[in-house]
Length: 196
Length: 230
Image (cartoon, rainbow over the protein chains, first blue to last red):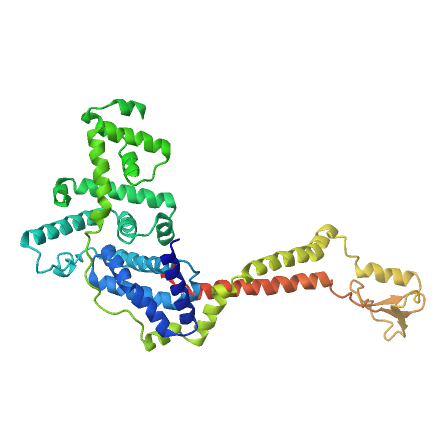
C-alpha cells in the first residue's frame, strides 16, 4: 500500500472514530471527501441524475446508520459498495417500470465543460467520442459496466472490486475482459474517433 | 494453441482465442499463456489489432463523463437524529451489532456444552433404563408390609382410622396400605426426593442462557438489517 493511501485510510479511520463518538461534523467531512466520487460512480451506472442523487443520499444515510459496521480498510471502497447496492435497487426498480427512458442521456450537463479556446471541430469530436462510448457502455451488461467503471475510471484494483461487488477475483477479471471485448466490438466502426 | 500459431492467414483469426488476447492485453496471463498470446499477436494481424484496441479501452471508458453533482449530501442535525433512531432501535442495533459479535461463538460453545450435559445426565440414563428402570413404589410398599412395620426409618405405623375402608391402591409412593399383622395402616412416607443432578442444572442453565443470547442476536440483527449492506 502506498504512503498516500495509508494516509487516506488513517485520516478516514480517524473521522470514522470521531463520527462514532457522535461528531456529525466528522461524518460530514467524510461526505465532503467522497460525495463527488460517489455521485460520479453511481450516475454512470444508473444514468439518471436525480435517481443517482437519491441513491447516493441513501448510501450516505446507510453509512451513517451503520458506521459501527465499518471494519477498517478502504472507507472509499466500503462506501462504493453501499452506493452500488443502492444503484442496483434503482436499476431493479427501473426494470419493473421499463417505460421510463433515461432522461439525462442527451443532456448537455453530461458533457465536459468546454474552454473558450476549443474550436468547434475539437468540441464536435469530443461530443462524438463521449456519445459513442456512452452508447457502447449502455449496451454492455450492468455487471461488466460496473467492473469497468470501478477499474478503468475509479482506479480500484481487482481485489477491491471483488470486495465491493461481492464476487470472486476470477469473476471480476472475467467481467472486465468480456466488457472490454464487448466495448471494442461495439466501437469497432468508430475507432477512428479515438485515434489521436 | 500451436496449431493456431501456424495459422498466419487473417481468415483464421476467427478461430483464434480472443479471450486469451484480451487477457493478454489486460496483463492478466501467466508466463506460459502470455508467451502463447504474444506469438498470436505477432503472427496474426487481426489479433494484433485486437490487442491494440483492447489496450485502448481503459482510456475510452474515461470518456464517459458524469454530470455535476446536483446537491450537497452532507447530513443535517435533523437527519442525524432521525438516522440514530429510537432508544429501542439503538438498543437493538447494539445487541445485533459487531460489538457483541464475540459473544456469538461463546454462546454457541456454551449451548453445545449445555446440551451435552443435559443429554448425558438426563436423557441417556432414561434411555438405558427403559421401562423397567424405575422401581414401582408399590413393590417397595409391599416389601415393607411383608417384612415388618418397623424395618425402616421411612415407615411408621398409625392407628387404623377406618378399618373397613378398602385398602388404597398402593401404586404410588406415600399411599397407605393395611398391615395384615397389626391391623394398622402403615403409611409409607415418600422418600425424600433426591435433588436434581447439579450437572443437569448447569446444562439446562447453559442451554437457556446461550439460547437466549443467540436468539436475541438473531432477532436484533434481523430488526436492524440494512439492505444496502448486503
